[in-house]
Length: 154
Image 1 (cartoon, helix red, strand yellow):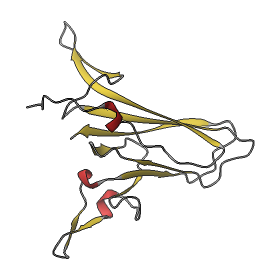
Image 2: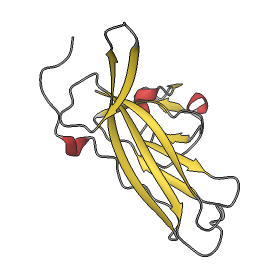
Image 3: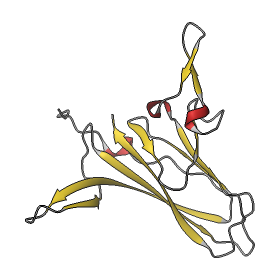
Image 4: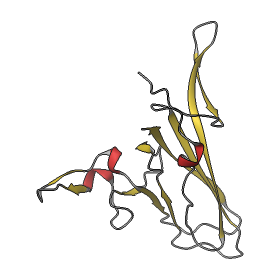
C-alpha cells in the first residue's frame, strides 16, 4: 500500500554530480509510470515529477558533454543518491557505488556494512549513498553521452 504523504521534490533532486572542469553536466529526474492502452499493451512513460509518494520508481539521468578543446582523460562522474531514494540499479553502464558516504567504492556485490557488534554483512541496494562512473577511455572534445540510475522513493 502506498503512503499518502507526498515528499517535497527537493528531497529527490539528484545531488550535484561532480566531474572534470571541462565536462558540462546536466542532472534530471523522472518518475517512471506504466500505463496500459485500450488493447492491453503496456507502455513505460518517463514524466516530470510533480509529486511523488513512497514506492514511486525514479530514473535519474546525467547528461555529460566534454566542452573543452582536449579529450577528458580519466573522467569520473560522481553523484550522491538522495536520502529519500533507495538505489535499484544503473542499466548497462555499471557504476561503482559507495555505501559509506563516498569514502570507499566498489561493485555493490563486493561491499560490506559494519554492524553495531563489529560483524559485517553484505551491502544491499538500500545502503547505497553515492554512484560513480569512471571512464576507461578519454572522452573526446565535443563528445557527449548519458548515464542513468534508478531508485524507488522510500
